[in-house]
Image 1: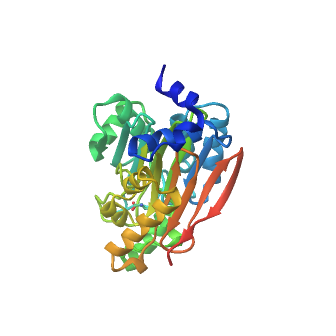
Image 2: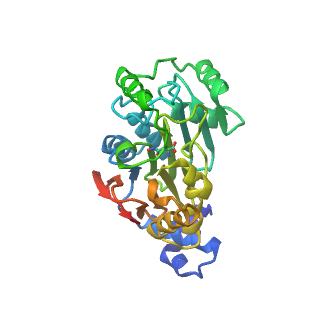
Image 3: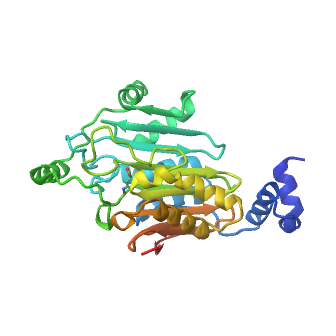
Length: 323
Ligand code: SD4
């Protein structure tokens, strides 16, 4: 008998087993198989166009990995979103450089950092995952790989973003404080009809960042992490704080130990507060989804929301916050 069949056949009996790490997984899977509210797609911020796209694909029976890639591509293509993909704000020297990553239910991962001229970095990350022996490609090499794989070279700096950058150049006030107004990174988690989880995260990073700066979003464990037996987490906000706490990995490991997605997100934000005396000055936010389809979210400053597709409907949901 296959493990999955065994799990199905044991029904709720498995859920009452003592909560050792290995039996926890059985418990999660058991209750998942009894759930009615999948598929689910959740994303940072009010990106309902993206969750709708991915959610509707999931509702048609498409797998989580394909859905999550297509979902975040909606924001990569959105020229009005100045922190993701095409139309993203440049660094202080005028280069638009993109970071993205993707993870599959099998635990595979692909990532690109400091990628220029390519409108859909998440799809390049997926190719890295599927067609190379590596996890991450950076800069020139990532661009070369993208072009060799048929991605089109485009100018990502829109007239609007260039205008804003030129305004910024007049005072060059470089204090990469992230607040509610200039957040827009999309991190997304999908759980498909089979109960498999995939995730992606894509951004142009902090506006007017130093040339060469890479944030948390393409770093597996920081901007995104998932374990198909437990759940997943995504981050947005000040990447440096998320990287120093390996936030998404932390949340998945806390869920493995039995915390709910909500409790795990709260613990991760409080860890960041403890590590950063200047926590008043920046925003971080996490969204997590467990194998049972439970969603949690927590942010440092009030104002973060997440988009959710569930029961074939999309909604915007205000996150709980620390201050
Ligand atoms: C970064 N975490 O590069 C990203 C920024 C972000 O909405 O989330 N912006 O640090």
